[in-house]
Amino acid sequence: MSEAQHIQWFPGHMTKTKRKIAEQLKLIDAVAEVVDARIPLSSRNPILKELIGTKPLIVLLNKCDMADPKKTAEWVEYFKTMGALAIPVDCKSGKGLNTFKDSVKTVLAEKLESYKQKGLVGKPLRVMVVGIPNVGKSSFINRISGVTKAKVENRPGVTRGNQWFTIDRQLELLDTPGVLWPKFDDATVGENLAFTGAVSDRITDTEMLAMRLLEVLAQKYPDLLTARYGELDLERDGYDLLTEIGFKRGMRMRGGNTDTERAAAMVLEEFRNLKIGRITLEEVNG
Image (cartoon, rainbow, N blue to C red):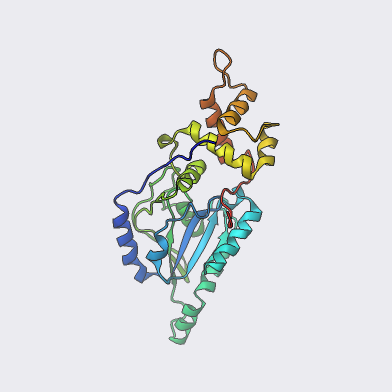
């Protein structure tokens, strides 16, 4: 088996971001965390829980159309046991987002009742939106607010600044002040983020990454793998699987050897573009 790649990335300015978030918490009523439904734990920031304290949390399982629906349902239940309301959504298409406003009202029912008792009916609820780079936080804000002020780019770390977005008279969103970076204490977390493209391919060994992905898929989704690439010996290691797939696709160099670099780029592209199928890499009891 190939060794897990140890990807390290936790910039020093996370301290500044943590301080900014802590300062803004007094202004908001709840937190909405955007995660990747394919890797619901790996795409979270581990310090978020201590940062937000007792603030109600809504977890947006983004890219749900790319994830295994059965496992997404299991993750919804998992977060429920953790005291958070989870919603499967797709921020690009808008799928599932029509339930977001009602979800905010659900988790803030006591706050709304308190406003009512104080004669503050109509006071807007305020929600801070958080998420590590490239999970879809800006896409969510743009889709739910109907504007394109939050810069969206498929490159980690482009969202900057501190903006409020008025959704309607009852709801306002605060974009996270600063970038909430991931921290890879576990090599598997770094790998999962690299598989999904949340970490740039420029800082990874894409051939090794594709080999590891094939080993994971051979274990978790063997049927999808063979449906896409034909009959494979799934007992073989990642290098042999990558070589076999590349050979089948005609990716050969002079002398007949498989061009594993091209094959790796293809495997990663096909995984990230749903050509292999709807896949969730993390399991609730995994």
